[in-house]
Image (cartoon, rainbow, N blue to C red; front, side, top):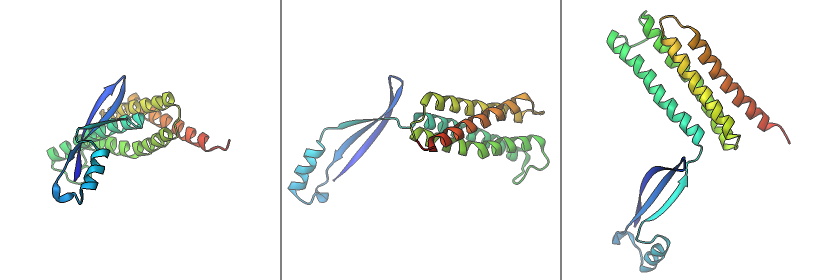
Length: 183
């Protein structure tokens, strides 16, 4: 005896909900006795049972999803340039490849600690409006930084992007420190 599950996401009043539908499948070789089948039937009726779970950690999950997609974009930019120039290691002296590598690397260096802080603050039920603001600052900062760094001459976008990213991490770090204070 085993249950198969079908999972579907849907929005309900702006909150993402996961619907888990259990479909009971019975195989006689897996049923040791009629008693266990009766107990199972009482616990899980043969008809489908719907369970709705609220989306946990929506701010962190949303930010992580964006980060994963953006990370893939930055990675793809590096790979495409490497393939075009047939350069497997380092940058081969190509300025554009160097900028793409740095945009990818800087993203990889800064986002994980921000996501970790965000996750811990959301688990600690820190103010969701402030957490959402920090997430927006982080995402905006990463976009601006990458755009600025991918330009032939890095300018204001790169500096503003890094400032936004560092401000987001600093605010979340200070919030975490505040939560650690006694009383």
